[in-house]
Length: 366
Image 1: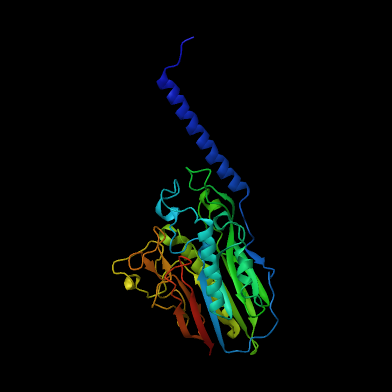
Image 2: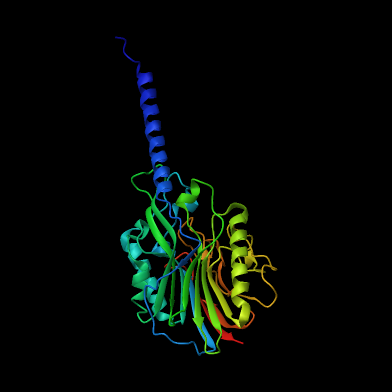
């Protein structure tokens, strides 16, 4: 029998490896497709924690919004997906080590505890994710504000994110996260509303299912306070998903404003507010994700409330270096015409615990 040449053996071995890798990719995509999270367009949310039922009598209320970055994107962290891409992590983090993750999260808890507010609208809160060491962050945040109502709207539920693709034994893994909303008051209605638009298959089965966490609170004047917690699409080439999501939010907000209800929308918009100058913090800086919201996005009288004194978001391609890392503002509020922003400020932490900074708002009812 004629022996195979060394070159043919190498080729056969190489082709076998390629075949095994392709099989792995196919299985990963099929698994994600079969287990794909597909929520209904409207889902009534059962409160995870309840507060004492009471009608809101105060004409002045306080809010804090914060994308906590699942306790994994503090100042020391960089993120492989924005730096190396989806094939390999290179020198970037897939997740921080456990002790660093715990330190970030303790800082998040303390910041919330040290800044009392009537409402907390939080994004990227994990309940069972490999990236945050399967900590139930939603529950543990409630432990520092134990008397508050709390509801959770899932917007990321994937059994296994197989990235980086070339590191199958060290991938992003299971993710369950979403929008955590807490308040001193008990709402009458708490609903998850699916936002329109998504990526093409197979990308969509590994991505977030964006939504609005919608709540209605009774007021002493007989009307309602409508509170919406939002986290719009980030990696959206051309901004097409953002346009669809903004149109949905606009229709929802204008409808909620009917009958003299009061509307507060806050969160991570992944866009600059209308009229915001991207170069305000660093001349010449632009970013593909923080495209501005058009000036005519909402009717006259609606108020975009943001604080330009400090940025609210940083690039996570590298660990944070003050004055060098690209920064911008994408976390802010939208208020209906019958509300006024009395005071708004960024709680400047120099991105110590998250790639976003919390924003604190005091508003008044007209």
